Image (cartoon, rainbow over all chains, first blue to last red; front, side, top):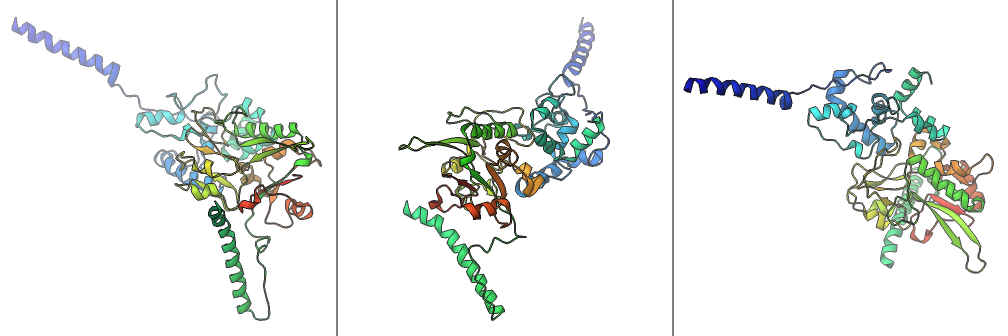
Length: 155
Length: 251
């Protein structure tokens, strides 16, 4: 009787643990996808992984205070390449775990507030056409990423 | 009240004094040459620009001013009820009526990009600042949303964002809890320099028929300076000594 009990209980607990692991404990390591029609990022991938926040922080002050907008480290540039609107039906906002930035930030428990103010996606074609042609070209040529993207699309 | 105005007046006066002191020093270094260039000493090419607007109200109809406002909204992605006390107001339509004749006149009013901006004086975090080229902006990264600048601005140029926003335009980051105002279309200026045309001016200038001039107030050769020199213009509430960068003709 006792042996029976001992035999049953461990087996049962093992099963319980296995179930918990599959439903709660499994961690999916993020693998953000490369933009389909872009070549290289502004820096090698390992540098970007480690230091993208430093580039953005430095660029942030240079842009706001000194009007420096030609740098390759631009948040707008990131979004235009990695999350342009209008590519799929779905609008991928930062709240969506599939958003390019959110994927890794969720994994590493990083909370940012960039996207409370900044656009969390690149301009969609429909939005671009609602701007005047001049404004649109200025918006798009304000950063090298967009130019690349437009060229790649043969627009 | 009088002391407040005096304080504002003090600064330019002090600056002028320092300038004349510098000129005096020059005369000592090079005897025989007397340099008395104060007041307009800064109006030399090669110096940092000071961007400004010249608005000819004679050339603006009510629909033109509406076009200015909606062009600004399209450019920066803000919208508002013009009668709301809390909505974003980067640029307003102001109606002036002469009670005697009943004559009406419409003008756009935005941030005046003052030389001595009171919004910058009162900001506790330094978020409200004036760029080297005279554009007065809010650095929203350091703005804590206290709204002192809104109270300090005599032109009612600034507004506060009360609601969470979505889908802001890339060129105009805006977010809840910060103050905002006209940027003089700084993203265009950073790109095109003196060839830039702010969205409001673009909306009302058609070929040779112009109503709003954008340019460098420090460059005597610029179109805006030439026009100011030839025709003169009004600074709104010039008595406060803020020296606004937006000037009006026909008022």
